[in-house]
Length: 222
Image (cartoon, rainbow, N blue to C red):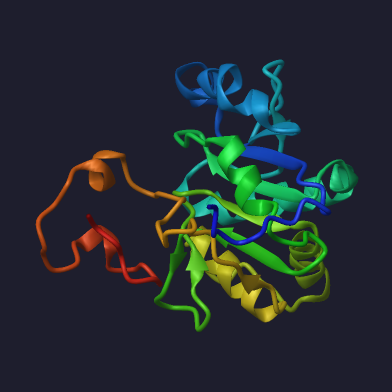
């Protein structure tokens, strides 16, 4: 008997996936995303600093780690302006991320995209309600995207830090976007910011390792 939570299929779960990348990674990384998991998204956009025939969307941002949050801001503004009605959920992923889109769609199907929600690997420090790890990828509902863009339009959100994921989390908190639980029915994480060997290798009981110190939820290791 399946005793898991009922899944609400009354809400459409179209997912727009946007990939943060740069010109030097198109052949080494992004073409493999395009040929694999990106095909399972309902809409895919590759965000870069230059326009190419790949195709990539040119954002008015220079490359470099110090500009990651600017790239995220400009990407979500672009999506809000041009693609808001093409999806209910908006996934941001780096160009070294792998996503099982079917699993993500199942997770999102339990939530209403017209509510201000975002999901990912929830980290605890720095922001009162926590924030979602950028390395694991994160998802904004349609209403969360609207509020994010509104926050920059009216000045409630600002580019106050170059730490992209934490700064976005602060804007989410300011705009009253709630972090939703992305764990599975057994309480296991479904977003992973570090390589698979950090999670898949069975470990004996031990103090929480460095890569789990930020986790909002108590880690389950078996």
